[in-house]
Length: 287
Ligand SMILES: [Zn+2]
Image (cartoon, rainbow, N blue to C red; front, side):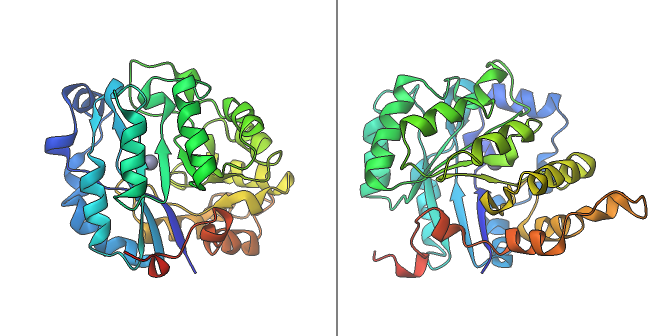
C-alpha cells in the first residue's frame, strides 16, 4: 500500500490573499503549472492507494482555504481520501471550528503551520488544539522547516520546538513535514526520541544533494522507520515524488559515496502511514 500523507487542495482566486500572491510572485512560483488543482488532485493522487488532503487556514500569511470546501472535495473520492482540518489559532472560535471539522465534516487529523500562522509551537492556543487532538486520537501534521512566505519568524518552524510538544503530549501522533528542511538533522534528532513523532519526506527530491544527504543521515541514525511518504501536491505529484525518491542515488553516480539502500527507499514509499498514525482506511469510515 502507498499512502501519500501530504497533499493540498485550494482555489487560488478565492483563497489566496494579496500578501500570499506577492510572496508567490517574489519567489517565482508559477501558479499556471498547477492547472485545475482539484481536478488534477483527483487524477494524480490515484498513484497512491490513499491520500491525506488539507487546505490551509493561516490569516497571518493570507492563506484562506475553507475547511468546508476541502471536506467537499474529499467527499468526491471518499473511498481513498482522508480529510485533515487546518485550524488557525489567530481566528476567533478556532476550537469550535476544530469541533465542527471533527464531528461534522469528517476530519480525521489536523494540519498546523506555525510559520504560516505566526504562532510558536508552544503557544497556549496550540496547546488547546493538541489537548483536543490527543484526547480524540487525531494526528497533527505540522509544516516544519523553511518556506517562501514572509513576515513571520522563521524560528517558529524549527523542528527542535516540537520536542517539548512531544514531551507534553506523549500520546499525540505528530508528523513533521519535509523532514524540517533545511534542518533535517534537527528533525531526525526529534523523531528518534519520541515513539509517536514521525516526519514526511514531501517536497524534497527536487533538491537532490540535500535530499541524498538527509536520507544518508536517516540511515546512519537508523531512524528511517519514522519517515512517511508524501508529495506536497500541487507543488509536485504523487507519481513524480515516487520516481524522484526512487532515483535519489543518481546524484552520487560512480563517486564511491555510499548509496541509500533500495530496501530503505521502498520501505518508506510503502510504509503503512495509516497504522503509524492510527488512522482508519477511508473505505472503513461510515458516513
Ligand atoms: Zn505542504
